[in-house]
Length: 506
Ligand code: FAD
Image 1 (cartoon, protein in one colour):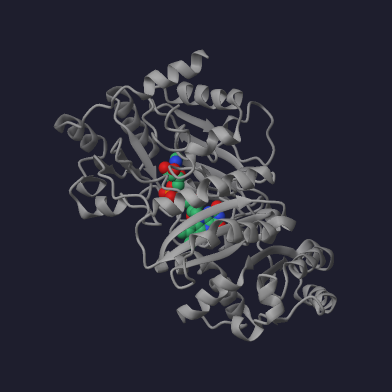
Image 2: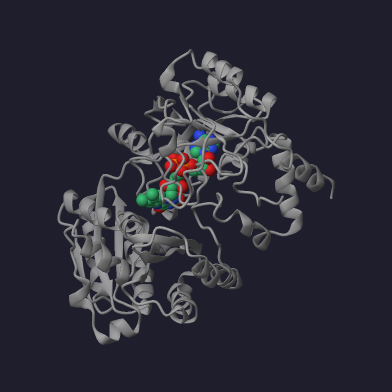
């Protein structure tokens, strides 16, 4: 069809090489400040060219730019558009699919948003916060919490990731069910298009929870991973800060019991249930073995023959957000009584320090496997009832035949079970390089079986350069063509994050 042919031709046009006069122009736009323009040879640029997982990069970048204002982003993009120079936007670089680093094929200019880190307004009555894209999530959370508001997003990388990166990946996290998707809480957005034009959706002028005066075009930029525009500012709806928080870790012998606990948590904890996170025996054991955390339960003492047979023990972190500690306490009591025959053991946090330490255990899952070796990561959605069945299928039919020993290959899984979101991880201990035979054994089968079961091959991490090739197996040709048309309309010279999100051949 015509748009497809158009896009294809554009993509195959080569980008221009970076010249001394390009660098002069960039330097002028950035006020001749050397800390805002770093040459490719700078070690900071090399570090910025490798992603968090270490799987992607370092691919050479042409340059690194750090604009401080929307006007500077606009001027830089206008120039890159004219000169046809490729750009990769970079937030906190915690993305897990290689989206925010340059590719070997294009050696993009890295455009970091870290200098745009101002929180510009918080309406204390409405709980509406406005900030620039480079604000670190934790800083935004702390700022809002000081004034009684909760940013409706939390994740393990909060100390590093930026709200602009979160928006560009439409990040999920554990509180998705309680507070809704990040995209659903965006009230206003400022975006710089590839040609430098600045789009403003209720960002500078308005501060409303409700507005139905136009197309909701801003949603197109959420989760589009920097391929349609650069997000420079956002207005977000916050939730009232919970006055009472409580958490418990419980262990179950079988996955059926996990499902019973989940159902009862919904029934008995009701509206205060904020998150439920799962960790299987393998990841629990690895975190325990790392020695970095005081574990409230020990996998070893809970490991019985029947639990092992069932794939357990399984650990659940259950978190509640409420407004009255006594009321919540009562709910917890009835819940714990209701599940006493479904769990092996459980520990209720005694204070906020322990509450936080419980979350640190769960959040250390990712860094723990990252340190052990090369991890093949699959972030999938599935009907909750099927999690363990699918994992067993993968273990028996895919991992078993590889004949690797337990000391050389570990399958450790965790996830946001309340959302039906599982993080399935296969780590080859001590290895740092990808093994093609392992990819071939796992990948087609993982994605095929997930799609067959009606799941999603990327629940919250996005596509980047790790999963973009799979788009054609997820969406039909009409949808793909529409996506290509959007890309061609908003970024006709294909300068924004080439090689990511959309399949490379399109
Ligand atoms: P980056 O990694 O820098 O960029 C991500 C993508 O967005 C790239 O394509 C980049 O080009 C683009 N981008 C960045 N900023 C902009 C901008 N301003 N405008 C346009 N495009 C931009 N993810 C979840 O969803 N849920 C989790 O629970 C979760 N837990 C994690 C735990 C750990 C320990 C780690 C390391 C990662 C986790 N992630 C999780 C993944 C990651 O943190 C998220 O994808 C996060 O939203 C990325 O934000 P960032 O600022 O690091 O973006």
